[in-house]
Length: 109
Image (cartoon, helix red, strand yellow):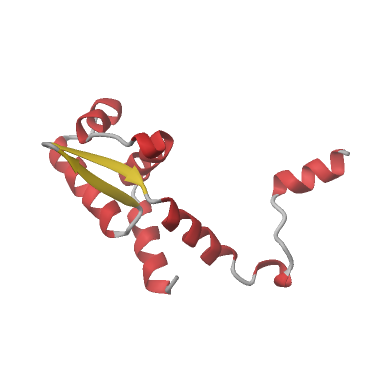
């Protein structure tokens, strides 16, 4: 992943409404969501929601599929994985990274 791709993704997620929209879409996974469902759940006006979805799509964080007259938005899992790898590249002096949960589990045993 290039820096510019990561920056675009972080900029898209750096706005509260977009972050909320993205988190909601991620929760639904492959099922996806229609804009009307997102509007109902988050109360974001349609014009504003359209703008936020466009920003998330342009950052490659979500995908969109047209089914008849409906647009279904789904997370782009490949981008999330790439972004995670980008953040953790060269982490921990080349050793596998241990998350806080992993460290706590090891200490508890």
